[in-house]
Picture (cartoon, one colour):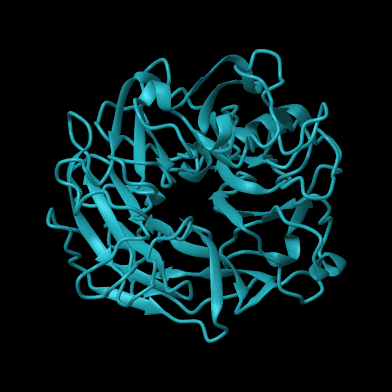
Length: 476
């Protein structure tokens, strides 16, 4: 009887879009596509000019035979490839012009501008369409010299005022949130104006994400940052989206009344299946003073903060590291567990799961060879139960683990074949003396599997390999 009731309750439990993972479809064929960043790659002889490679999805998953490489030398993209532009410093996606095709949004943090000066930074859109990505426009430049608009992980997109149009949220000068409100025209112009969110604590942002944490139908913004020049003073801040834009930021507090410590990476998704987007924060660093008063810091850790009708509930925060029951490996200094969190449903059970890199993992006499672990979501939140791990020495995985590969420096969960289960994409920017490579792992009802996994790099893309660090980032 109890089992039957549990099955009924499970059938009635909301299956949120956050748990399934949003479709990001540049060519409108019904399958999600992948964008891979190489911001330090050489383009047309210009070092660190950068590019973004796009691999298109299909009924059989991602296909490297269907791909594009986009740089500032691509027709329709603003300016041209220049040394130090770092095209691909941040990557996101949204249908900005509301034509039914997902658009590619690219950070160019090293871009100079005539009005702002050196390294003001640029956010560029490349428009989606029936034949793929083409054309584009500048969405925003930094306002001042060295604003470095759109640095890594400091760009996200969501509807933060509930008007049905996507808004761009980006960090300017490392300290302020700049909200550029859609809809956007094909010239890149925003029709909704701008909002600047200033924090008097002089924060240094580390990552941004959008999602509906309080379930009101409007996207909220979550950020991780440290205070001023105090690298160790990390925190999580939540800005509720309202019809007037972002409300004042709130810092979740734990059961002790202390603020929930942040980290370098975060993702949002409905991990516990209650219809609210939950916050998953990775803190891959350890060995600092704050280790004394933060839960299980050794080797890095992942925090789960549930969403609710009143926003994030810090008093119910949960923590996992490699010493948690069920998690592969063991917690060791400098493992980097908690690197580059991604959240989506890998097994199709309706609960979002979380991938985390462990790029500093040592094994078989190798240093910083790296690995990836997928933590399973469920009604009780994010725990170590059922966690799985892969690395380049896992049977069935192409290649071989080597020192300083940093396999797992970046991760991405995405459902490219639209079967209701997200595949795992892994970046190893250190592979082949910093050329970098990408791995793709298929998913099953039991989770991620190495069977059928494949890898690609500069040889497949036809790009310059030397010091490209391909896989430094993925679209979010």
